[in-house]
Amino acid sequence: MEINEDKFSYDRGSTFNVFVGKGQLIAGMDKALVGMCVNERRFVKIPPKLAYGSEGVSGVIPPNAVLHFDVLLIDLWNSEDEVQVQTYFKPETCPRTVQVSDFVRYHYNGTFLDGTLFDSSHNRMRTYDTYVGIGWLIPGMDQGLLGMCVGEKRIITIPPFLAYGEEGDGKEIPSQASLVFDVVLLDLHNPKDGITIENQHIPESCERRSQTGDFLRYHYNGTLLDGTLFDSSYSRNRTYDTYVGKGYVIAGMDEGLLGICIGEKRRIIIPPHLGYGEEGRGKIPGSAVLVFDIHVVDFHNPSDSVSITVNYKPSNCTVLSKKGDYLKYHYNASLLDGTLLDSTLSLGKTYNIVLGSGQVVVGMDMGLQDMCVGERRTVVIPPHLGYGEDGVEGEVPGSAVLVFDIELLELVSGLPEGYMFVWNGEVSPNLFEEIDQNHDGKVLLEEFSEYIQAQVDSGKGKLAPGFDFEKIVKNMFTNQDRDGNGKVTAEEFKLKDQEAKEEHDEL
Image (cartoon, rainbow, N blue to C red):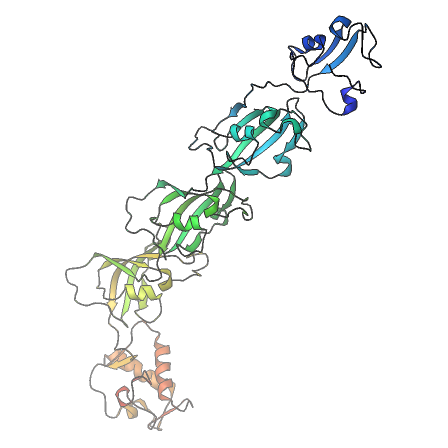
């Protein structure tokens, strides 16, 4: 046994490190250490014949001295030891395990064999992120992480010759220290990974699949591989709306949203090099694998027009709706996912419009064209022909595709384009004089209104259907009152065919 001036290892501030049974110790200590456990404390009494005998150690131990040692075993290993792995929790499902060259994110507590903590990623509140099996870690950790599942917890015990050896790390880890790591694996991927798609629900009917350039509305829950939720559109009660394949979302999502059906649910697993990379973003840590559970609510393409499907058409279908006609119809309005928005049937009354007059969205004006009374059709309207990006607050979501199931109940033919009133017979050659009932050479609005009403009541004239009578008459009168003085003179008064059509909508 080597003797220094310091008789206590505590005084030196370092443990006494030695192989047992190899002649590096006095015989009595070689025997006394056999069978000890880590953290065991023994009081050892060694007689001279098993210590330094009759000669002693000059200036330190006298001849024939009985030696007393208070021994605490801190660490223990053998040159034939290997890395020890003890798994104490393993998830029920383990689709993938750590392989050489994988990149992992894990938390750990690092202790010595006696339980002394020397490091912890938990204390730093940041995972340890590294490649496995390519020399970025001590050899024992490279071995100990292999075969782990995400979510698995294991204790990895590493002998010093597979850790920091005789030199230690120069900081917290002393020479020849065995290391114990309590590890939980949070994430793993390989730089060669692409995205993974797991189909969870595909509708029975899938008439169209998303393509590059389509605009999608979808709900999602975003989690890390260990299940930690970092974002959810459901919590905001609003879909995420974006173009796909155009770089508006991370590369992995751009790819994962292609080829999907309306109503489909799928899981998209995105490696960090196709997600937010080494830097991460917000609640997403660097080098994190992302898991998105998505539900596609609808999608369209900006080039889409109105889609019309005729569900029923009467055998007698000769009179077709056209611009200017007055229509009465029932409808059920829903989103592409089937969510009901509105229904005239529930209100017990029809919806009445003048076709092509801007009283409904452009797509509905298009969808009601060329329809006959009794016909039923489904009209699908993309948002740029519906309510656009803004939608209708509290009723129609922004950028929503609309589905209308329509039944036309009544059609009143409109007037030729540009006309608000037409004659059903010959026009009197003395029309101004007939309107000017008091023969003062001036027609007031009241006279004009009474005359038009009389012509409509007698069947001699017809107003454009679906519009307010007073508004039409006032508009007609204003067009005739060219100087705007509230009176129409004979010089101002002209029939429609007496002037350019584009100038006035009048008699």
